[in-house]
Image (cartoon, rainbow, N blue to C red; front, side):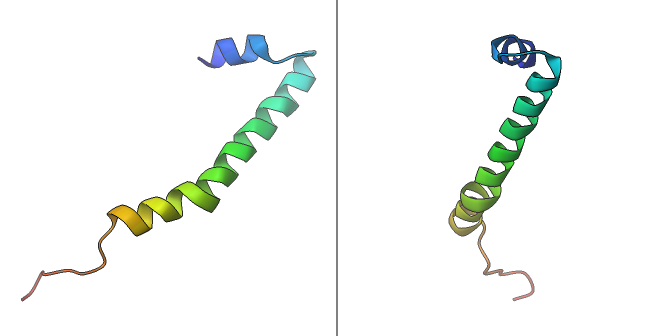
Length: 52
């Protein structure tokens, strides 16, 4: 998968490195901003019955 992405990115090697870094940062930003909070609100239950 990464090799296919590397071949698709245009430009010389240093431009591909910059583009790949930007893509990684964008994906991480989207995950932190929208995906992880949605998962925490949807799937993680804050109420516990341990000790009752």
